[in-house]
Length: 283
Image (tube, rainbow, N blue to C red; front, side, top):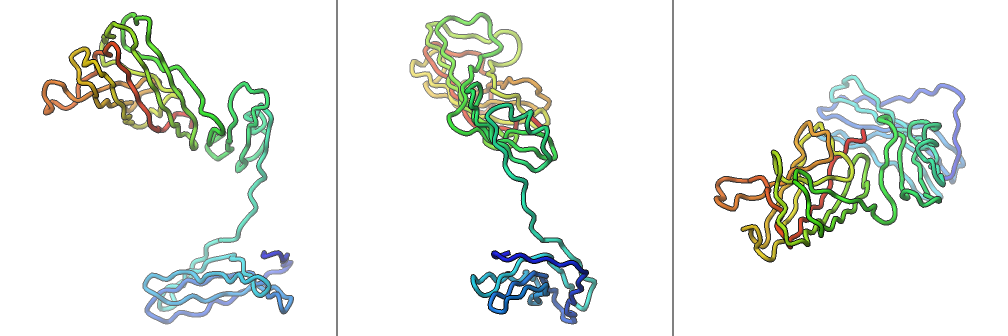
């Protein structure tokens, strides 16, 4: 604590001052290093009674006094029964770096470890991961975004001349950021086939435990397929969806009062762009 080592090999009792006032109080118990005196002791630091009491700030003056908080004490008004919260800090497990096989390495370490995959064999991605109580998970990708090929779903045979571009990364535990740009460079309108709207695929399956919304746009400068030049698109992964497919909707082109319609046509010489973040199904 503050550069000093303290150890107690016996039981210590600390008295908490009574509180006969009409307002509660919050105290702290600290280890106090008194540098000029060359001593360290466990002491109680009294807070101020208040309608909304706050704990005293530990003193940390280099070369003078340094306090480390062990407990926070709630002292109710009118000498009510006190409650104690443990606040002592603990060292976190050391971070572990691996050239590869990070997940296999993590299986041999306890809960609470962070890991770095340095991807020295260049066959995946540089990333940070975490062994938590929910299991092993990637917490974020490091370096360049990963690429993937999004697909247009619920169509018949697709014409040649469609470009598929997609990037994505883990940005937090079970959280994915992505962007797609699908360009129909052909002279053929892609029509919906079967039931439901045209759809696109995500890089990682979304969580099936909640519905999720995605924002996009149709860039259609030629006003093809009787659609405007710019169309706001809405993607939906419904509750219970266990696939990587997101359905596409757009504002009704006939009557705004009708709300959203299925997107049934991907016009020639147009692009569909989506981007956003979503909860994945890794946990």
